[in-house]
Length: 261
Image (cartoon, rainbow, N blue to C red):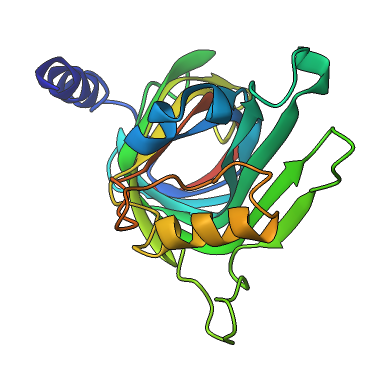
């Protein structure tokens, strides 16, 4: 953390002489690999084994450059997160093993400090860091049973109700606070238009799950007559430790600066 702080300060000082104050607009896409990390999930072993998952962020950026080198970025993005799994105990051959997933969709509002290099050069540095707010848009669970038992499941987790009740399980929070870090560069096509490319890292700072996730996991398994795994393993009292959503990817975007003196 100390080295990161020193890097940001050095970047700020080095770019104080570059003039590109004004509004900044952008459109970006971030293909990424998302992960949901949880102690109980890891402890399940071969029943709930992690698989690579494709996710992404895409949307619009709106920013304002306060000084020659420093600005503030916000905007609206759609963020696809989640986790894919494979049940290694479901079949002897990998091609016949059951697979399942949790798919989460969020509307993301970033609140980022931006530092940039010389806009008059052919290329320059580009760095963003700050919190983001994720507003839950969708949450779905799917289990693909590849045996003859036909215990496939497809569940909207926001609409999943308790047995003999119309009450819905509270599985995911509507608002998750996270942190975004992006670093890379910009190809300055003109002094106003630039192609931005950055390594993207982000993660949740608050637990995206609610306290009923463990209880809901047992109900999901019961709905398959106990044939499928519990997607939210927990203690006997339904307690689950905090889950952490993390994502690593690469951001590409076009930005236009409407500058003024």
